[in-house]
Image (cartoon, rainbow, N blue to C red; front, side):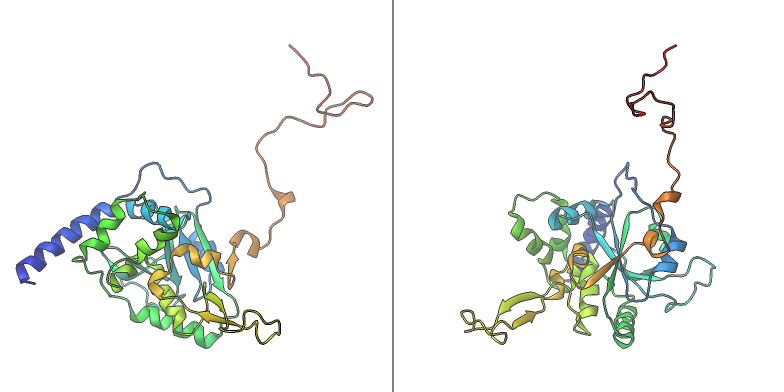
Length: 279
């Protein structure tokens, strides 16, 4: 490929990336995330799922049949504080156009989020995962992979549900890391931690009934096939909700004004049955 052609494709790629990153108007989170509460709740190695509102987010949510379109890995204090005094980056993510970068928790203060925590992850393996993600900072998305970008301009492609995940995996491998979860899945595969393994019976043993014959073999899928919702669906990741971690007492909730239910009622009447006063 000539240098001129390469430059033209790169420019076209950057143009498509900007279009895909344009945000939808009118997005309002149901439960916006407080960065301080997230900081107190998250542990290094935790995965933060995000409900994005970009054009590419709509396509990913449709293809995966999920509300989660983005994922980032929490690394705690592993990254240095910025010299300009801005918020410390505590998440590592992969963005279209930017590649692998570190971002502060405050970036997602106006988004719906969910915390997924790998159950039983050892400190050593946690460190391996965090270090792997840090080592990938600076990796860029190749804008010349035009086909990988064009597929997201069809948020509702006319294909069967069972083929939609394969649409995400189309391409040359590395470029699919623009879906963020692929790189995180690769990090967990470094320590052989399961996410959604494929399970098959041991060959030649399907008709037997001994415990040995029922042994299952776990096949780890290629990391490019993982999507943000897989961490939510995984039986090996705990869903952590900050409002419950620090204690929740529904009796202390203050509700909006409701009609007074303590008014006097006649014999055998309930408050709802009592006659209302008229002016």
